[in-house]
Image (cartoon, rainbow, N blue to C red):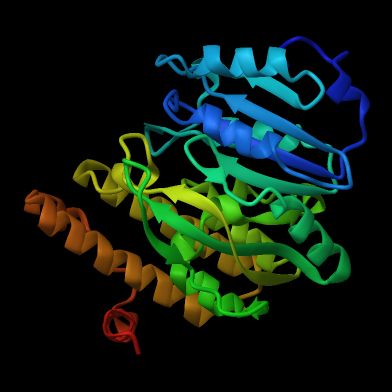
Length: 321
């Protein structure tokens, strides 16, 4: 349900951009995230949509307070854990993610997880102007700082040097970690007919990039305009390092990629199989590092002919080639 109803000032505007924020157990971070959206300077109207997934750490209460204070900007949706989507028996934030996107009314959608934030007050304006000038681009992204638990900036990724178009094969092979999710800005009409592989995906960012590939080009800006937190308790990067989830995640990812391969008429067949091989190698390494070697027995290798090329790609990346 939409908190405070639909007669708020924000419901009466016609936004050009919908800022979609999904949050769960982000009490230490959510204020900074929302504030960074409220501080955006644009010459067009925006709405900020928050999907709160019934947190127990105080996140929900903070979101309510923010929504009450900014009824001209924020639309808050209070989800119930009863509606959580389970994939391979594991609870996910997929329902909240999809429903928050569905609530968007703007021509464009900018996404941000509740533990991340933006650092450029003109981020939306810059990406809006870029997309308006390049109608063949379905999604744009930019550089971001990776910050640790203490908020210290550790690195920049994906290290875009110049305004450019990203090769779709590069995005497919790199996976969900290609860029910071809070850097993406995309056309909302991409979501008009969402395929099943997108709806049922285990990880939202990667499936979004794949969907964008089928709707146009992917554009990149060199500006550093956001901060992405890595490794805190509720992050996906932390979850995926838990041995008991690795095989389930891998099988779900394979299923999505197989279905995307059909969806895209096998146009990216090689890159898709390389991505699967890379995931199998990463999964094996993570299981070994976890010390729970029994999970290796459950690891299935889809097609061994791609294993060696995938290993070579890993070595090139490590060597900076």
